[in-house]
Length: 162
Length: 103
Image (cartoon, rainbow over all chains, first blue to last red; front, side):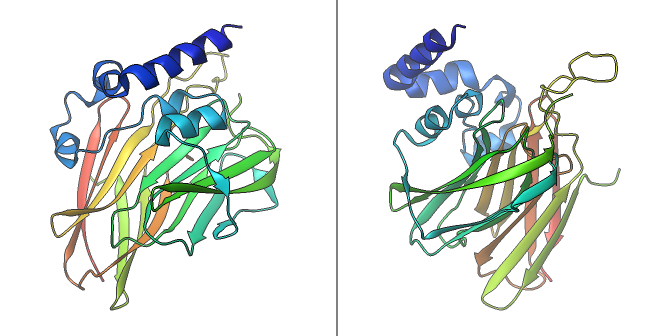
Protein backbone atom coordinates (compact mmCIF):
# COMPACT_ATOMS: atom_id res chain seq x y z
CA UNK A 1 0.00 0.00 0.00
CA UNK A 2 1.13 3.52 -0.72
CA UNK A 3 -0.97 4.86 2.09
CA UNK A 4 1.87 6.28 4.11
CA UNK A 5 3.46 8.04 1.20
CA UNK A 6 0.14 9.42 0.14
CA UNK A 7 -0.75 10.95 3.47
CA UNK A 8 2.76 12.30 3.91
CA UNK A 9 2.46 14.04 0.57
CA UNK A 10 -0.92 15.38 1.50
CA UNK A 11 0.36 16.71 4.77
CA UNK A 12 3.16 18.49 2.96
CA UNK A 13 0.71 19.99 0.53
CA UNK A 14 -1.54 21.11 3.35
CA UNK A 15 1.21 22.60 5.43
CA UNK A 16 3.22 24.12 2.66
CA UNK A 17 0.72 25.46 0.27
CA UNK A 18 -2.82 24.92 1.47
CA UNK A 19 -4.21 27.83 -0.44
CA UNK A 20 -2.29 27.02 -3.59
CA UNK A 21 -3.40 23.40 -3.40
CA UNK A 22 -7.02 24.45 -3.13
CA UNK A 23 -6.85 26.79 -6.07
CA UNK A 24 -4.48 24.80 -8.19
CA UNK A 25 -5.42 21.17 -7.69
CA UNK A 26 -8.68 20.81 -5.97
CA UNK A 27 -11.25 22.95 -7.61
CA UNK A 28 -11.38 22.08 -11.26
CA UNK A 29 -15.13 21.40 -11.19
CA UNK A 30 -15.72 24.89 -9.86
CA UNK A 31 -14.28 26.71 -12.83
CA UNK A 32 -17.58 27.10 -14.70
CA UNK A 33 -19.76 27.91 -11.69
CA UNK A 34 -19.75 31.65 -11.10
CA UNK A 35 -22.75 31.42 -8.75
CA UNK A 36 -20.68 29.59 -6.17
CA UNK A 37 -17.57 31.62 -6.75
CA UNK A 38 -19.65 34.60 -5.68
CA UNK A 39 -20.56 32.83 -2.45
CA UNK A 40 -16.82 32.53 -1.85
CA UNK A 41 -17.10 29.18 -0.15
CA UNK A 42 -14.44 26.75 -1.26
CA UNK A 43 -15.37 23.10 -1.44
CA UNK A 44 -12.89 21.22 0.81
CA UNK A 45 -11.73 18.80 -1.88
CA UNK A 46 -8.76 17.46 0.10
CA UNK A 47 -10.82 16.71 3.21
CA UNK A 48 -13.21 14.64 1.09
CA UNK A 49 -10.31 12.43 -0.01
CA UNK A 50 -9.09 11.63 3.50
CA UNK A 51 -9.14 7.98 4.57
CA UNK A 52 -9.02 8.54 8.32
CA UNK A 53 -10.94 10.75 10.72
CA UNK A 54 -7.79 12.47 11.90
CA UNK A 55 -6.71 13.32 8.34
CA UNK A 56 -10.17 14.56 7.40
CA UNK A 57 -10.48 16.77 10.47
CA UNK A 58 -6.96 18.12 9.91
CA UNK A 59 -7.66 18.85 6.26
CA UNK A 60 -10.90 20.61 7.15
CA UNK A 61 -9.92 22.57 10.20
CA UNK A 62 -6.15 22.23 10.64
CA UNK A 63 -6.53 21.19 14.28
CA UNK A 64 -7.80 18.34 16.42
CA UNK A 65 -11.10 17.91 18.22
CA UNK A 66 -11.75 17.11 21.85
CA UNK A 67 -14.83 15.16 22.98
CA UNK A 68 -17.55 17.28 24.54
CA UNK A 69 -20.87 16.36 26.14
CA UNK A 70 -22.24 19.64 24.84
CA UNK A 71 -22.40 18.09 21.40
CA UNK A 72 -25.53 15.93 21.24
CA UNK A 73 -25.84 13.48 18.41
CA UNK A 74 -29.07 11.71 17.61
CA UNK A 75 -28.38 8.53 15.66
CA UNK A 76 -30.03 5.11 15.63
CA UNK A 77 -28.47 2.25 17.64
CA UNK A 78 -29.07 -0.05 14.71
CA UNK A 79 -29.52 1.03 11.11
CA UNK A 80 -31.28 -1.64 9.10
CA UNK A 81 -30.41 0.09 5.87
CA UNK A 82 -26.93 1.58 5.65
CA UNK A 83 -27.93 3.54 2.55
CA UNK A 84 -30.10 5.88 4.59
CA UNK A 85 -29.10 6.56 8.18
CA UNK A 86 -30.74 9.62 9.72
CA UNK A 87 -28.33 11.54 11.95
CA UNK A 88 -28.87 14.88 13.62
CA UNK A 89 -26.86 17.03 15.96
CA UNK A 90 -27.56 19.88 18.33
CA UNK A 91 -25.22 21.71 20.61
CA UNK A 92 -25.39 24.22 23.40
CA UNK A 93 -21.95 25.56 22.46
CA UNK A 94 -21.85 29.24 21.51
CA UNK A 95 -20.37 30.78 18.34
CA UNK A 96 -20.68 27.66 16.22
CA UNK A 97 -19.22 28.15 12.76
CA UNK A 98 -19.17 24.64 11.34
CA UNK A 99 -20.57 21.15 11.89
CA UNK A 100 -19.19 18.04 10.17
CA UNK A 101 -20.24 14.40 9.99
CA UNK A 102 -17.72 11.56 9.66
CA UNK A 103 -18.07 7.78 9.45
CA UNK A 104 -14.84 6.02 10.37
CA UNK A 105 -15.40 2.83 8.32
CA UNK A 106 -16.57 4.52 5.11
CA UNK A 107 -14.16 4.55 2.14
CA UNK A 108 -14.33 8.34 2.32
CA UNK A 109 -14.52 9.19 5.99
CA UNK A 110 -15.91 12.70 5.67
CA UNK A 111 -19.58 12.63 4.71
CA UNK A 112 -20.80 16.19 5.10
CA UNK A 113 -19.55 19.49 6.41
CA UNK A 114 -21.87 22.41 7.08
CA UNK A 115 -20.94 26.05 7.42
CA UNK A 116 -22.97 27.83 10.05
CA UNK A 117 -22.95 31.63 9.61
CA UNK A 118 -23.81 33.91 12.53
CA UNK A 119 -27.58 33.83 13.07
CA UNK A 120 -27.99 30.22 11.96
CA UNK A 121 -28.75 27.76 14.74
CA UNK A 122 -26.23 24.99 15.50
CA UNK A 123 -28.73 22.22 14.73
CA UNK A 124 -28.46 20.09 11.62
CA UNK A 125 -30.24 16.93 10.51
CA UNK A 126 -29.31 14.88 7.47
CA UNK A 127 -29.21 11.35 6.07
CA UNK A 128 -25.98 9.57 5.37
CA UNK A 129 -24.68 6.29 3.95
CA UNK A 130 -22.75 3.79 6.05
CA UNK A 131 -20.73 0.97 4.51
CA UNK A 132 -20.91 -1.13 7.69
CA UNK A 133 -21.10 -0.93 11.47
CA UNK A 134 -18.97 2.04 12.43
CA UNK A 135 -18.37 4.95 14.67
CA UNK A 136 -20.13 8.11 13.58
CA UNK A 137 -18.32 11.26 14.61
CA UNK A 138 -19.73 14.74 14.72
CA UNK A 139 -17.30 17.64 14.91
CA UNK A 140 -18.48 21.09 15.93
CA UNK A 141 -16.32 24.16 15.48
CA UNK A 142 -17.24 26.75 18.09
CA UNK A 143 -15.29 29.85 19.05
CA UNK A 144 -12.36 28.61 16.98
CA UNK A 145 -12.12 25.29 18.83
CA UNK A 146 -13.21 21.81 17.83
CA UNK A 147 -15.53 19.60 19.87
CA UNK A 148 -16.72 16.14 18.96
CA UNK A 149 -19.25 13.46 19.79
CA UNK A 150 -19.02 9.80 18.93
CA UNK A 151 -21.54 7.02 18.57
CA UNK A 152 -21.37 3.51 17.20
CA UNK A 153 -24.16 2.68 14.79
CA UNK A 154 -24.69 -0.97 13.92
CA UNK A 155 -25.51 -1.51 10.27
CA UNK A 156 -27.41 -4.59 9.15
CA UNK A 157 -27.19 -4.00 5.38
CA UNK A 158 -24.36 -1.79 4.17
CA UNK A 159 -25.04 1.20 1.96
CA UNK A 160 -21.78 1.69 0.14
CA UNK A 161 -20.72 -1.64 -1.32
CA UNK A 162 -21.99 -3.41 -4.42
CA UNK B 1 -38.71 21.20 -16.05
CA UNK B 2 -39.60 20.68 -12.48
CA UNK B 3 -36.92 21.66 -10.03
CA UNK B 4 -34.81 18.96 -8.40
CA UNK B 5 -35.13 20.89 -5.15
CA UNK B 6 -38.07 20.76 -2.78
CA UNK B 7 -37.94 23.13 0.13
CA UNK B 8 -40.20 23.84 3.04
CA UNK B 9 -39.31 26.93 5.05
CA UNK B 10 -41.51 27.69 8.03
CA UNK B 11 -41.27 30.78 10.17
CA UNK B 12 -42.14 30.53 13.85
CA UNK B 13 -41.71 34.27 14.32
CA UNK B 14 -38.21 34.23 15.79
CA UNK B 15 -36.65 31.55 13.66
CA UNK B 16 -37.20 29.94 10.29
CA UNK B 17 -36.89 26.19 9.97
CA UNK B 18 -35.78 24.94 6.57
CA UNK B 19 -36.12 21.42 5.23
CA UNK B 20 -34.77 20.58 1.80
CA UNK B 21 -35.11 17.43 -0.26
CA UNK B 22 -33.19 17.17 -3.51
CA UNK B 23 -33.47 14.59 -6.25
CA UNK B 24 -29.97 13.40 -7.01
CA UNK B 25 -28.39 9.94 -7.36
CA UNK B 26 -25.48 10.80 -5.00
CA UNK B 27 -23.34 8.01 -6.47
CA UNK B 28 -20.26 7.68 -4.32
CA UNK B 29 -18.04 6.06 -6.95
CA UNK B 30 -17.58 2.94 -4.77
CA UNK B 31 -20.67 0.99 -5.79
CA UNK B 32 -20.71 -1.54 -8.63
CA UNK B 33 -23.64 -2.09 -10.94
CA UNK B 34 -25.16 -5.48 -11.87
CA UNK B 35 -22.35 -6.11 -14.39
CA UNK B 36 -19.70 -5.50 -11.77
CA UNK B 37 -18.67 -2.14 -13.22
CA UNK B 38 -18.11 0.79 -10.92
CA UNK B 39 -20.82 3.40 -11.11
CA UNK B 40 -18.87 6.66 -11.53
CA UNK B 41 -19.03 9.20 -8.74
CA UNK B 42 -21.87 11.67 -9.23
CA UNK B 43 -22.86 13.64 -6.19
CA UNK B 44 -23.75 17.13 -5.06
CA UNK B 45 -20.70 18.90 -3.67
CA UNK B 46 -22.14 22.14 -2.44
CA UNK B 47 -25.60 23.29 -1.51
CA UNK B 48 -26.21 26.88 -0.44
CA UNK B 49 -29.14 28.72 1.09
CA UNK B 50 -29.48 32.49 0.81
CA UNK B 51 -31.91 34.77 2.54
CA UNK B 52 -32.07 38.50 2.01
CA UNK B 53 -28.84 38.43 -0.03
CA UNK B 54 -26.94 36.67 2.74
CA UNK B 55 -25.76 33.11 3.00
CA UNK B 56 -27.55 31.36 5.87
CA UNK B 57 -26.29 27.80 5.36
CA UNK B 58 -23.77 25.96 3.21
CA UNK B 59 -23.52 22.20 2.90
CA UNK B 60 -20.33 20.62 1.56
CA UNK B 61 -21.15 17.06 0.66
CA UNK B 62 -19.24 13.96 -0.33
CA UNK B 63 -20.52 10.76 -1.88
CA UNK B 64 -21.43 9.50 1.59
CA UNK B 65 -24.64 11.52 1.71
CA UNK B 66 -27.71 9.41 0.94
CA UNK B 67 -29.43 9.37 -2.43
CA UNK B 68 -32.06 12.09 -2.76
CA UNK B 69 -30.44 14.01 0.07
CA UNK B 70 -32.34 15.62 2.90
CA UNK B 71 -31.14 18.33 5.22
CA UNK B 72 -32.77 20.37 7.95
CA UNK B 73 -31.52 23.51 9.69
CA UNK B 74 -32.88 26.75 11.15
CA UNK B 75 -31.84 30.37 11.18
CA UNK B 76 -32.85 33.41 13.21
CA UNK B 77 -35.18 35.82 11.46
CA UNK B 78 -36.92 35.23 8.17
CA UNK B 79 -40.33 36.74 7.44
CA UNK B 80 -43.35 34.90 6.09
CA UNK B 81 -43.68 35.56 2.37
CA UNK B 82 -39.99 36.34 1.91
CA UNK B 83 -37.95 34.24 -0.43
CA UNK B 84 -35.15 31.80 0.26
CA UNK B 85 -32.79 30.99 -2.60
CA UNK B 86 -31.35 27.49 -2.82
CA UNK B 87 -28.62 26.32 -5.22
CA UNK B 88 -26.51 23.24 -5.66
CA UNK B 89 -23.59 22.18 -7.83
CA UNK B 90 -22.41 18.59 -8.31
CA UNK B 91 -19.01 17.06 -9.10
CA UNK B 92 -19.82 17.10 -12.85
CA UNK B 93 -20.53 20.83 -12.76
CA UNK B 94 -24.31 20.49 -13.07
CA UNK B 95 -26.31 22.99 -11.05
CA UNK B 96 -29.86 23.77 -10.06
CA UNK B 97 -31.38 26.75 -8.32
CA UNK B 98 -34.80 27.46 -6.92
CA UNK B 99 -36.53 29.88 -4.60
CA UNK B 100 -39.01 29.06 -1.88
CA UNK B 101 -41.40 31.31 -0.01
CA UNK B 102 -41.16 31.23 3.75
CA UNK B 103 -44.49 30.06 5.18
